[in-house]
Image 1 (cartoon, rainbow over the protein chains, first blue to last red):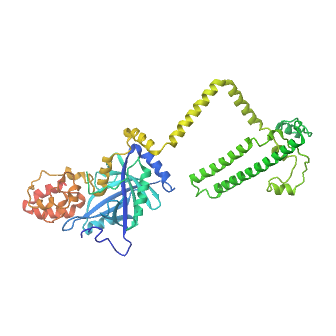
Image 2 (tube, each protein chain N blue to C red):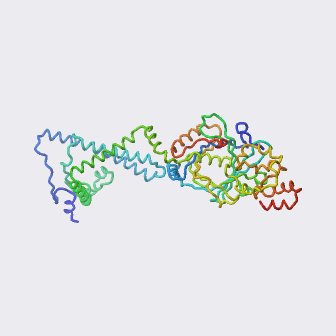
Image 3 (cartoon, rainbow over the protein chains, first blue to last red):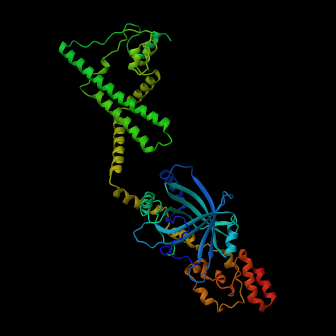
Length: 208
Length: 311
């Protein structure tokens, strides 16, 4: 069960094929306040929302090639909420002029028994982390400012340590495939956050 | 308070019901007519400007009261700008040389009655239905409130006290500040950006290395794998030159990146019979131990128990 590249065979299933457009950046802890102020002004007027999530990434190793990755996420601040299962495909290697990272995305809400189910299916948990931060929304764009915490003892989300001194800033849009004006809108929004944060498309494979 | 005193407080003229009109200094009939015409024209335009202002204020108040949820700051600023512009035109109109000085004119109430006057009510949109003793002091007043008058006197005394040179210097400083600010705001963006970028070098608000680290962590879990693995590596009787190692090392690039130091800890799961070097996470326990048991059965149970305990 291999994850084919998305341009060859998008994940289908009777629903619209959704793509995630993504821009990422980071901001140091000292500059967080000014970034939050700016986002509160730029984004839709709603109560500032904070979140604390625990995400576990499960791998299924097939016979050959790339393992299949699934992300299981649940909220630590509201434990009764359903779990969230997400599949992210490979980034589309379309034209280089596209400003955002585009990849296939499938989101499913599940019950509390998700980790056991995945274990029974044969997935193994690869890594996990805790993300705590703020979420803002502007139209269909979602801005998430979060701090990543490394889980020291597996399964124990109380015992964590921060991964770095920065907050991760992600600007994402979920849209059906083929809408390129979305990336234009994202780019103009990212312009407004300069020079506090530089949001750009970062290829996750290109690790430094 | 007595009516006479009230009139005395609000008008510059002596109290009482007999009011002296300001006399125009002996002009010829022609000039009087011309002045009258000017006065009329000025009053007309003043009335129309004030009506515009009133309408603008009315719509703004309506918007504030009924549509405040959808109101955005830029539109509030627009409204204020409109009001300020209209006040400006009224000021300009009053300062215009063609406008006769309104200070020289006096309004004399000729008839006060407590009865309702329909014409007046219609004229003032039902705000002044009766032209009586109560509304005259408010509508025809020529002096400001006593408190306001006090404050004005204080400010004037202060201004007279500091002397003309100090005043001049203060005026100059204010002008300089305003012009500096205007220049900064009017200059093209590039100039501003370059000097700001230089200023911000030492106050970087983001660290590109951190960005990469965070993105790698979220993307494929770099530096996030369990620290237990690195600690629980047994000094291992298991030979590193295990024949199974070769294919494990070349397993997809993602797998190698996952673990710290690239040790093949997870890759035991790829092929069942290949035994892992490290015990791995206790959470995965059952499957792994079973594999290990199969492999090392030959070495004897005692060794195996030791190994499980290390987990």
